[in-house]
Image 1 (cartoon, rainbow over the protein chains, first blue to last red):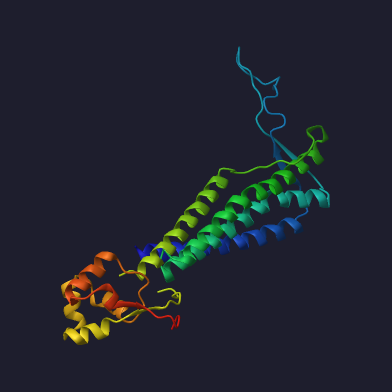
Image 2 (image 1 turned 90 degrees about the vertical axis):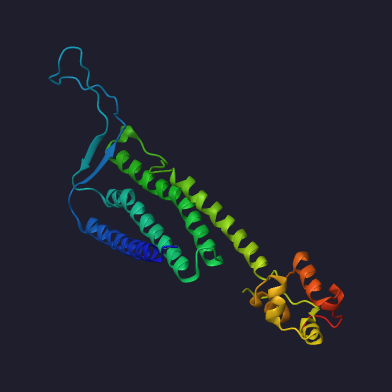
Length: 193
Length: 77
């Protein structure tokens, strides 16, 4: 095993996790202290026809996402603005932190050990369960914010983000469980003459 | 090595080697396993022994498995 690469990766992921955490705190503070407009994107008017544009013959224009901005937003809108972006930042920082802990366990104790298998399962469950939860918080916040600016669009529970991460998380859980069984089998064999 | 489960099996390799005037190293060479593994067996830290290994040990020491291994009714040490 290339320990130098693993050590570099462990340090890099830890640094990224710390930077992500600092970005989370910094973003939260700056957003709370900011008294500017709050903006959000929505696809509610996607494919709405755009008439009056100077287009050539036979050309139709339709919109994709619309950007809504609220000057002098309410406290609720500021909170929803935070809720739309911050959860993913926190999720990413914690995931990187768990990954760096996994790599440290691999460096200190070896890859096929109880500790490494356990930390891989923890990371997997965190990603598998955290992704839809984070997506729900971020999506619902964004949906509420859109609804507060454009009541016609309405708001409701929405899950946003890369939900494919759930499969990645479950794969990590399965791999961790396989590794745990492998560790048990190796421990049994270690005392066999 | 992980913590071992207590058991009541006794290994009499020391006695058999002394009776035959053989060293652990010589036995390891004849049986074809390492001295370290044979030490694990001698010191009662083995969890299991393959039949093939047991056969080779018995061939080398000219003994029966019951000469090498016994069960101690007094229980785990």
